[in-house]
Length: 225
Image (cartoon, rainbow, N blue to C red):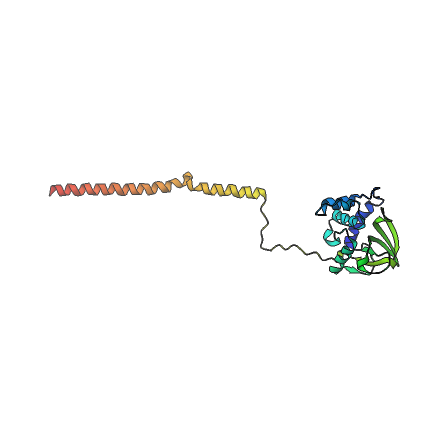
């Protein structure tokens, strides 16, 4: 069992029986329009939704980086191929891609589902837009399978954080630092430092007084001679 695929299956099982509206509208297409498509094109609200369902499930399971996020099955299959996560062996949790004409050509893929169980050459799957309108379990043989995408084999680049980098300060820490800075700036004028200034002023005053006394004594001595 592909571990990432298992998470997708857990989401998919809860949606079994979902049926598109009469005009083709689905909540998966609507989700794609509102949250993924940059132009918010209403086309997707009623478009074929087999792959948009998987994108929605991946988002719910928080495994988009491993499972991909596509509305087009060909692009999705090529994405797995690019990430060295593409192959021909079925396994539970794998994403299965079909060409109903049996061409085995990745450029002619026209449907996608997720493998729930493998029984010899028989696949038991869960598929969105199955039979053109519903989310349901299907039993398929390998004749129409082009290949499989394996979500757990997709290498996700880890976000690099330098070992010496300190974590960003919290709001409380920023407030504490601001308070600390203000307090330190205030220490330049606190009364505890005033005695130092008084000593300096006192020394200057004593020097002036001594000079005055000495000058007076000199004048008195000069008067007696």
